[in-house]
Amino acid sequence: GPAVRFEGVTKHYGDTAALAGIDLDIAPGSFVALVGSSGSGKSTLLKTINRLIAPTAGRVFIDGGDVAGEEPHRLRRRIGYVFQNIGLLPHMTVAENIAIGLRIDGRAENGRVAELLEMVDLPADFARRMPDALSGGQRQRVGVARALATEPDLMLMDEPFGALDPVTRDQLGERVRALHDQLGLTTLLVTHDMAEALLIADRVLVMDHGRIAADALPADLIAGK
Ligand code: ADP
Ligand code: ADP
Image 1 (cartoon, rainbow, N blue to C red):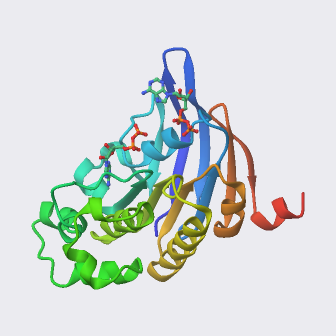
Image 2 (cartoon, rainbow, N blue to C red):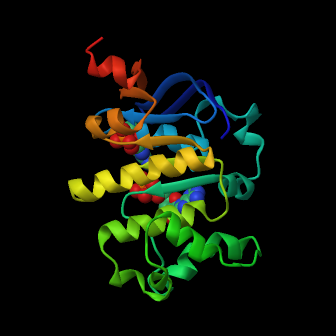
């Protein structure tokens, strides 16, 4: 996966500084967790990477390229995005939902859906199901499969397991970490669950009022350093 760099990134909403000058380097292929209380700027930081949000000032680079100069559709093809209560299209089957990015690109499905279902540990016959016949955890798995369909090298995950029970959370967390390793992704995961962050990530960033308040290795946080 690519390197991601933030240079002096701020985002203001009126008087609120959602991001108050972020300077940050994410190493290629790393798995970084963003934790911090609600409203600390985690989602905003993530969305400046795939240009769902334009910074008020500062720049975001992927492998040295300023995202502001990238065509949004190209950017979103290389950046997988998974969020809470993933929006599956209700009138489309699981297969059609997973393949939507491929269809937009005019690419043939070519067995890719079956491969993606297997990657997220869902049975092959789920391809024909409708989204309302899935559990919350199964839906989030389909969301991960959809995000991976266009072969991104960067994954942004915003509380992807936030609404799930603890056992399902743990299983999905492990799966996502394994996929990260297998596919050589760079992954940024927003979570309010510090235990999850410590378990999955290589590096934990704690956000507070639009700043990076702490930047540590899980082992050091566990040892209380
Ligand atoms: P987190 O993901 O850590 O919960 P957010 O990035 O969603 O935090 O929000 C950071 C701050 O920016 C909060 O104070 C939030 O209220 C504010 N904010 C986010 N989006 C908007 C918006 N569209 N309009 C106004 N304020 C916003
Ligand atoms: P919010 O934090 O405002 O609730 P979400 O993070 O849930 O917003 O979703 C942001 C929007 O981005 C959604 O409406 C979703 O449809 C859209 N979206 C879905 N996939 C992608 C993608 N790969 N890249 C950019 N935007 C996407």
